[in-house]
Image (cartoon, rainbow, N blue to C red; front, top):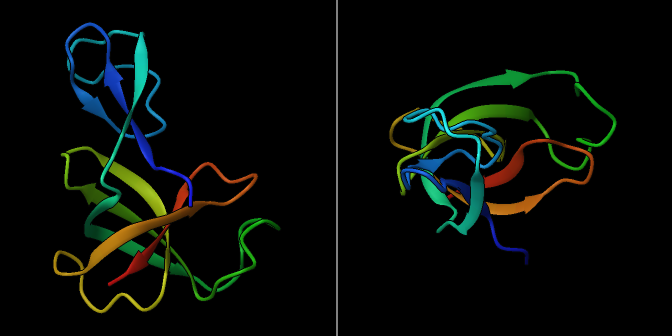
Length: 108
């Protein structure tokens, strides 16, 4: 299994979402990668009945969520499994899907 990484601003040390290009704190553009625990809580989500791309066909339903990572940053993520209630659902990183910008997290 690959390791999930998030951004860390080289100027101020702020932890950032995995796909951040600019620091939300100091607006720095030098972003390094740092390992994440890959765990968090769903803040909000939506269920898509039709896949938005050809690469997201290995799990259903197609749920995209905002995940508050345990380290602090929020990130968009695909979710595998049923999401009963935001704010109480723990998720963990599973993998990156080739061709997709968001990681896949699983409930539980």
